Length: 105
Image (cartoon, rainbow, N blue to C red; front, top):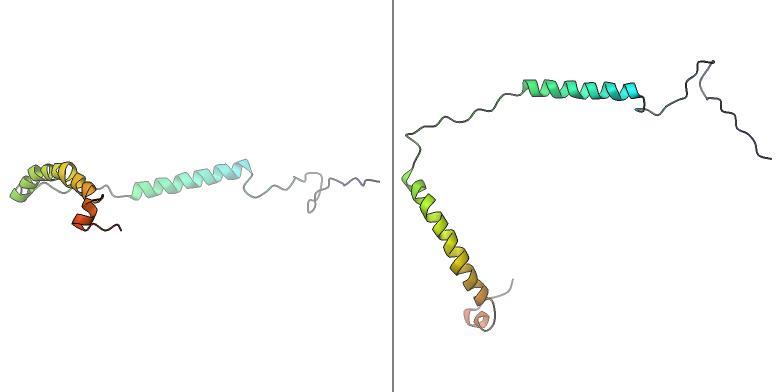
């Protein structure tokens, strides 16, 4: 015979007994946690100091070497991609590999 198990709640007393729920599954518990997280975020954001930019000092800006670098840098990149990298690729293949002494890493 199959025994029927009773559906009484262990640890609950009286007719007003509620079924036991897992911790955190109560809808009001979720609302409380959401409100608490929102309040903490609001306090952290309200307490944050705004970031300020450095003031522009025309006496220190415009160093002559920086101005030259703005012009020379693109030329150096073009030389790297158009001449030096293809030359390295050619030099890393036979027969140039043996002539130039290129070693594989």
